[in-house]
Length: 177
Image (cartoon, rainbow, N blue to C red; front, side, top):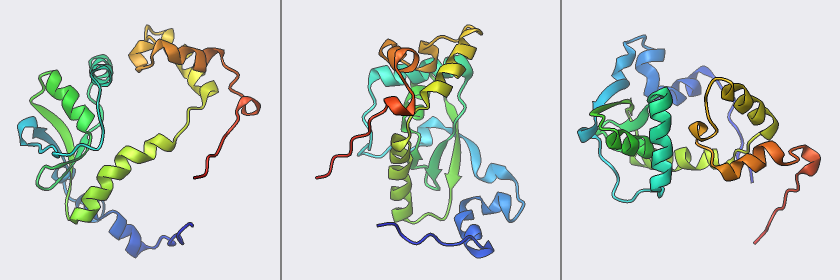
């Protein structure tokens, strides 16, 4: 069942952007929320929501070496990590002492816990558009960017370059329990 979606108005937009109020609504310096944080100050949860393999960490390390550290982690005001644990682990492996973080203020514990789950869950529902992905990869390969640089495994090659990726070739199966 889908919940009714609220129409946006200035009041609920303001509430939705409350974490960025200093920047957006009050026009204050954005460094209040985006900061370079000492890695040793960041608090990892005792119960991680994701398991990160050495292979996954190594893929991210390779990406950071290739293109830099580009995505800040999310922290609450006490520096508890809400999103970006893998990025933190890779930065530690690389010997970083500081990383960029967005500090979310005025969170309830329920909101913090919700953000932790949402950040990990929502991306799982996405699917690759193999035709567009193939074009982008081919373009980047001309500039000495390898398939592995993009964190793909050789097993992914067949899915992207050899499979029939048209809509007609896809069969979606829905299992109901």
